[in-house]
Every structure is written in structure tokens, then in C-alpha cells.
Image (cartoon, rainbow, N blue to C red):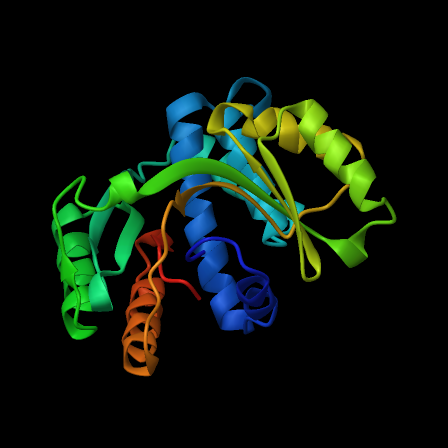
Length: 241
């Protein structure tokens, strides 16, 4: 769940251990919970829930697990109360980092996130200190080998549905949308039978930073530490991986 979509990242995600996959599902479950609490359990009338469900499916979360999480969140006896919080800071060599979290204890999460930055040689900043270096975009990734449709066919479907950009990279098609058009584009692609390895609204960097070997080690350590935190949902950065 970290950084801008790159094929290397997706391949790494595919190879996650069962334990890592379980942790990812737990985090997605919190996103489902928050979406249900905010807009109800019916995705037809809750666009945020619809988008989170698509994200869960792209992460190969079983339908039964998704449905159970929604039912649990909508249950009368469910008193779980998570709040979405965004942290901003700097990694090694001034790499901009945005951390999205879902927490029931803001003080604990803030302390944990700050500790991760400190240990990796970075520092947690104030709200707005790096977010201006990112644009919020819908990002959809399709693995080329998962479809029989041609590149031109997929590009036309996406652009006609309202996508901003279409790129063909090694092994994947990457479709970028305005956040307001994300659901429309994603649903049109789904109707055409296309499957996604990633589908979510993300913070996409407008500029990137290159790191030397030492900086790369520190940045990887920061991302690993943050991903280990149960409260952290997504990590975005402008390191040129």
C-alpha cells in the first residue's frame, strides 16, 4: 500500500506471506468499517464503500470476508470507532512522505508514526508540509496477461469513460483518473470484464527524489516500519524507486 503504483511493487505484493496478507486484510477491514459508519452498508448508495470494496477485491480479499466485514460494521452492537488521520513528514534526503492511518487512539498512533520517522533518520512534519507536492488521483492497474483485450481497446474504454491518462508499462496498463471520475471509470472497466491488481484513490507525487544506496536503505526501513503499524492504512512518497 505504499507509494505510487509501480510494477515492481505490485509483484512484491503478490508474493506476500500469509501473515502479511492477513495484516493487509485487517487494515482493509478497518477501511470498510469506516466507510460503512460514514455512509451505510449499501454500496449502491455509498460511493466510498463501493471504492473500498474495489480496493479489497484488487487485493484478492475473498468476497465472504468483505461481506462479513460489512455486516459486522453495520451491526447494532458494533462500537468500534476509528478515525482517519493523515500525517506528513520527511524521509532521508528530504523525501516527502504522507501516511494515512485509521485509529481509535490518536496519541498512540502519532507516537508510533513519529518513532518510525525518527528511527529511519526522518522527521514528522506539520499538516500541509508535503501534501502540496502530491495530487490526489484515481489509479487503476491492469495486468496485461489478465486480459485478451488489446491495448487500444482498453485505452478507448478508459478514456471514453472519463480517464485522464493511460500508460502501458512493463507487464501492466496504468489508468489515471480525477478522483471524482474514479468510480465511473472503474465500474466501466469492470463491466468490460477487466480485473485489477490495484484500484484506489491515491496521492501521486508531482516530482520525485533520487536516493543513493544509503538513502535507499533508510527509506526502505522507514516504509517497512510504517507498514508494520496496525493503524497505518496507506503510505505515499516521492522517492523515485
